[in-house]
Length: 236
Image 1 (cartoon, rainbow, N blue to C red):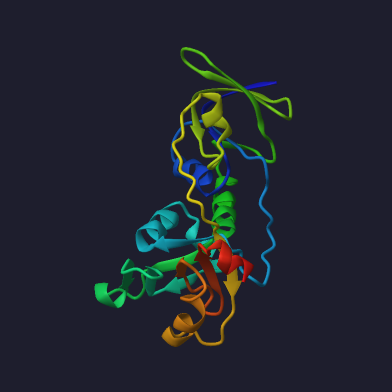
Image 2: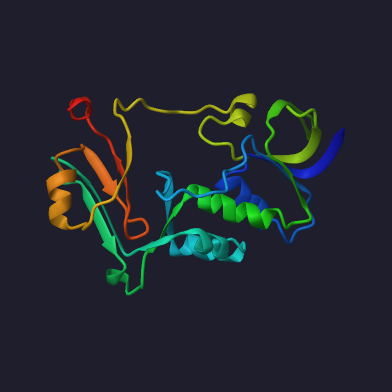
């Protein structure tokens, strides 16, 4: 079966769904193709994949109608942030107090943002969701592109948007080059639950452990931890 749309969005994560939600008041026909439907149930411990949303990002999500769904799930305001590198003068920190604001924004799990956006997109008459489904082939003509999905569904689209992540299938199909560097480091993702997060706690436990590290408060209890430990620190 062939279906014609104006825009086909490959990838139904935060970015792809935000694009679809932003087109809610248009007359454009939109298709969103996503291989995996997000798990609805949230666990007690937050996901390690979170985003530090600025107040400007919150404004965008409010306009898309998704912010209420985020707040109903969970989001934690943050009023300060610090990133530093051990054995170096490299360091940056900023706070809401410096800018006379109540907070800098909110720490939100990526899946929470995705779920809230998905709720809104499902209400749109101009959007068709193919979830779960994957693109199998792509052909590009003079005025439109042809997509075939694993389900057997065929689509034609005037515009194809690639929002399918770092290992983008679409980028590979159209041979868009990607420049990258091998840094020789390992990224540490961990969620901690300290009773009191203080400067002394950070200096005692965090600074000796990782070469580069940033930490963000989540739910006032948990700390999603992001760092690059050396091989010696990992083995120790």
